[in-house]
Length: 131
Image 1 (cartoon, rainbow, N blue to C red):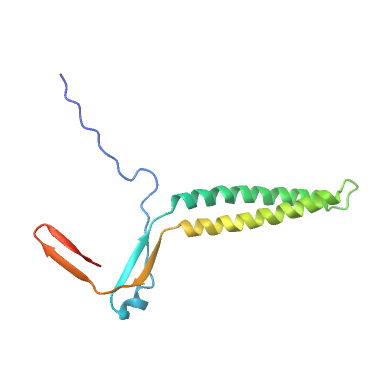
Image 2: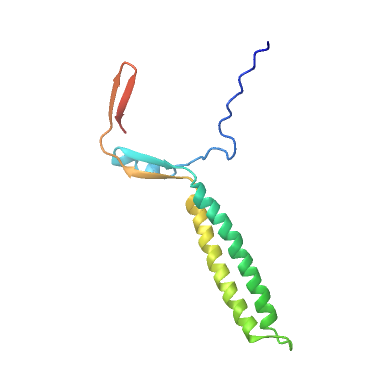
């Protein structure tokens, strides 16, 4: 009978770990204790932002095409198509701008908060405290 090898657990499959750079730490370092809260990537916001960026971009492109045909000076031009293209272009651009803001809000960030006193208690096998 052959012994089966244990399969290895792979951690971190998918996106690389988020890295957060704290640039403003020097500004608050003279104020005493500082609490740094790290927030990772908000995957739901990121996926929603990517989806609505593509849908808003497609609506804006359709609006450009409709407005170009409808607002032209050709005999086939239609005021309704011109108005529909302008509306589609405006709504698509607004959706795309909002979705890009959602993507930027989903990125990892660090929050600097004023900290209180730092207390640490060390015991046999225990480290506890308020940081």
